[in-house]
Image (tube, rainbow, N blue to C red; front, side, top):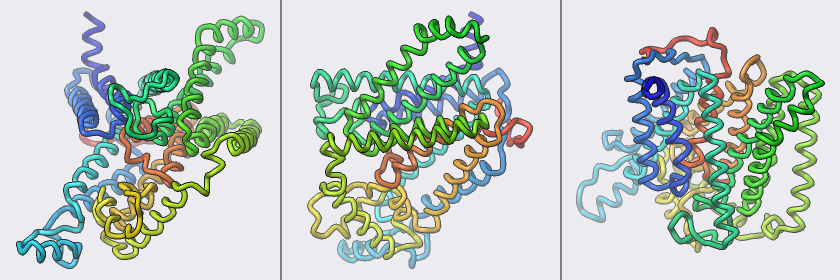
Length: 464
């Protein structure tokens, strides 16, 4: 009974949040209304449990970069909402609204956004992503809960990757109980797109590397020299060996996804974590060795992939490369036509249809989150969005350099940001909830542990 009471008062907010983050990728990467809505409901339940908890939670403490980042996010959210409204000045309305009114011979309100309904959907997702990071920040004030979340992400992600391997090996072309309609010969696990699965698996792989390094330090390096041999044997049997096997299976899953970016980031992500963690430890020589080793390993694996993988051999000569370059050019053309106001969040497909003359393939995304966000929001709001993200990432870098305890979390948040943001330049993984939820959670707990409690200022109202 005592455990049940403690679970009700202290752990419900955390586990509601953790459940939303770790279960969302199972539902087709979370990129469908039902799994996304269920995750939003779990987040809402977590917030309610947090507010109604009888046990007093520590007040959410903020720091200057986080305050500025949240302020910039608020401006972007307000502008994205304003794009959907009809009371803006008439000169702001997209010309298509006037043409549509003339064709239909009926008055139309109009908006900056070409498709306000789609923009509302994009706005809902953006607010949800910000909420995930903020809730993770609040819950991550406690390092034990922050570590528990990383462990939950690792174990659930490893289970998804192992499921994908089993399905792939047995040649079952399904995602859960649905027949696969794309990427038939690629491992995608519970995701539709191989690239999005690979980026998610890269995050999982990096979490696993972080935990195994932390376990090594706590279990082996703390022992006296005479007791290390026995401790090493015990650790390999009970923890190190199983984790290493799971890491190998996750990496194999990334390779079998046949995602080129995912393969590269599978080296860069864990390598960057080891580098950042050595910087946190002030082990400068090991940091240099880590950077050089990661570079050599990446070069050798790319060389091997270039010779033995058709996808790498045709990197610059396949339809994907040519069509993406064309999409980028047309996106820049549309951006030049309306650089300041944008076309509304999630409005790329409607805009692109006006510019894709002569293209056979239909593109629903720009395959570059950076370009698409600038197109949707306009240059001013788009730059504010990326400035807010840059502020938060710089906070993680500050935590790596200056933190003296719990360096696992800022280093992990920073390496996760390297993975996701690098991929955002060439694909649209930041629009897939199953990728963004884990990333936002890692960034949130990383920021929570990047500042000492005495360096933060209390926010109001106090959450109880």
